[in-house]
Each structure stands twice: as structure tokens, then as C-alpha cells.
Length: 163
Image 1 (cartoon, rainbow, N blue to C red):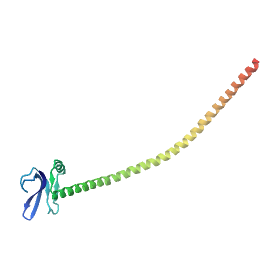
Image 2: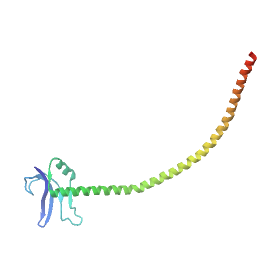
Image 3: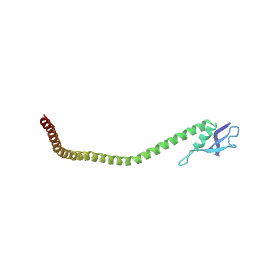
Image 4: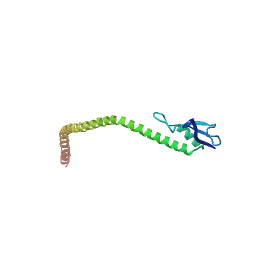
């Protein structure tokens, strides 16, 4: 059976662990299949306490490897750190885009104000042109009505003559 566990290295009283995939029957520090990362429980200052290749961990877990309790905790911690780092990166990107979005929002607001005033001006111009069009149509309608009245009168005159 394949497992994921810690392999101890480092000096006396200064432990340092490699996270390895190994056959469970092998010794603690014996032969291993693949090294996935390391864990330094006494990391200080700028030292990195945990490094783990999560893509390879997922691969081996998919193959049926059983992690030890401590390795399971380390994997969980690493995933949480990755999630927090991803969220921080998203927030930083959002903070960087926020001023750009605010500027874009101000521009669109200015465009909307301009668009609102422009239709009012166009509306006044449309009213004036509509009044002119009505004035032009009115004489044409009157002449059409007059022509219709004359046409009605002519048939009546013709009918009167025919009788």
C-alpha cells in the first residue's frame, strides 16, 4: 500500500522533514517513490516552513495513497494558505481596478447627463419642426377638402342636368 508521510532529516534537535510518497512497508527514512515537498517545524525569520506540490499530492491521492495524520493536517494548512493567498490577490486586483472603475463610472455618469440634456434640446427642435410640418400640411389638407367639395358639387350638377 502506498502512503504519503514525513521522512526526518536535519541535525540532532533540529528536525527537518521531507514529505514523500512511499510504500508503507519501507522504513521511515528509507526508499521513497517521489518527494512532494518539505516541512520545517522550527522555521524562523524569512524561512519557508512548508512547501508542498499540491498538484502531485492530488495525483497520488487519486491513485489511492493514504496520507499520515500529520501530512493530512499539513495538506489542509497548505490549501488554506493557498486559498487565502488567492483571495488576497483577488482583493489586490479589485483594489487596483476600483479606481479605474470609478473613473469609468464618472465618465458614464457624465455621458448620461449629456445624453439627458441632448434629448431635451432635440425635443425642442423636434417640436419646432413638427409645428412647421403641421403648418405646411394644413393648407394641403384644406385644398384637398376644397377639391373634394368641388368634386361632390360637380356630380350633383351633372345629375341635375340629366334630369
